[in-house]
Each structure stands twice: as structure tokens, then as C-alpha cells.
Length: 53
Image 1 (cartoon, rainbow, N blue to C red):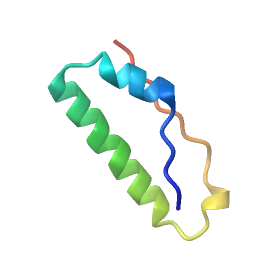
Image 2 (image 1 turned 180 degrees about the vertical axis):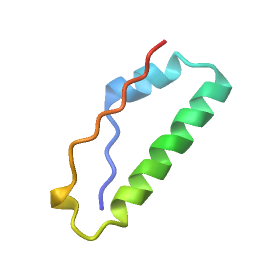
Image 3 (image 1 turned 135 degrees about the horizontal axis):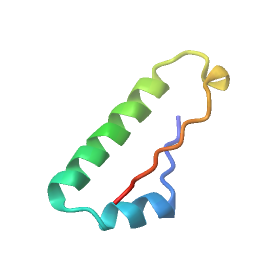
Image 4 (image 1 turned 90 degrees about the vertical axis):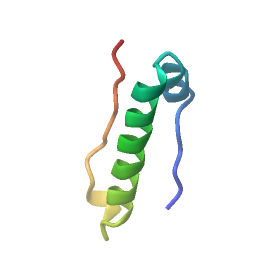
């Protein structure tokens, strides 16, 4: 499975402090890994992550 990260995600990530960045990166990674382990990815709903600051 290919993992793509939008420019808007990295731009928003840059606005956070170090602890917040680490939390967001860990959560995004965990989400991608858990989605990759599902056998039928075409049936997954579209997932969008928003960073509010």
C-alpha cells in the first residue's frame, strides 16, 4: 500500500510544537498501518484528518 501525505498536512504539522507534532505523527502512522492491515481497502470510508490550532 502506498502512503501519501498532503502538503497541507505537513504545513499544518509545522505550526505545532514538538510534543504536538509527535502526537499527530504517531496517530497518523497508526491510522495508516491499521488501514493497511484491512483486507478490503476499497470498502473503507474516506478519512480526513483536520488539525485545528
